[in-house]
Length: 123
Ligand SMILES: [Zn+2]
Image (cartoon, rainbow, N blue to C red; front, side):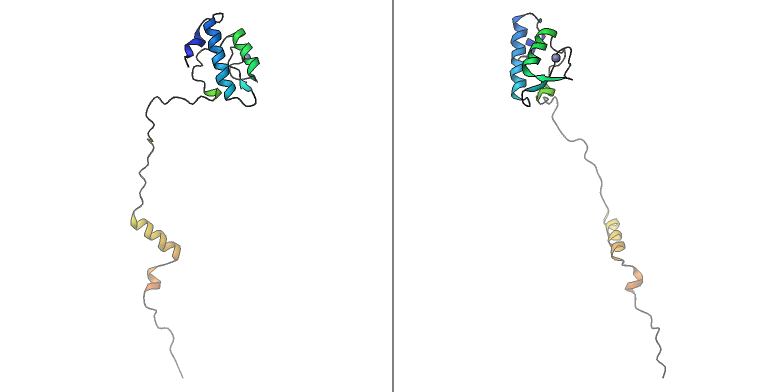
């Protein structure tokens, strides 16, 4: 919708139409009819039912600069193509993995070699 309506003068019909549009927008996304009040006094901090908020906005004015109604469920429009820029280059060398596996299994060179004869039979 045209959010410039909200920027119109508070007593103008344009403003009232804009507020009505906002209320309809917020009501559809409200939780049990309760929304954050974007009037100049509540500044999206306090929560009232949509009817009370409607009255607040008409009386105190719409919070200036609140054009992206993210508080009221509007998803922010992507300004730039979303592309992950946090790709990390973490590569493990094969040798590193192999040594880790050897440590885990307890494989050492000592076990691989031939066992030295210690037992001597004597009659
Ligand atoms: Zn309010």
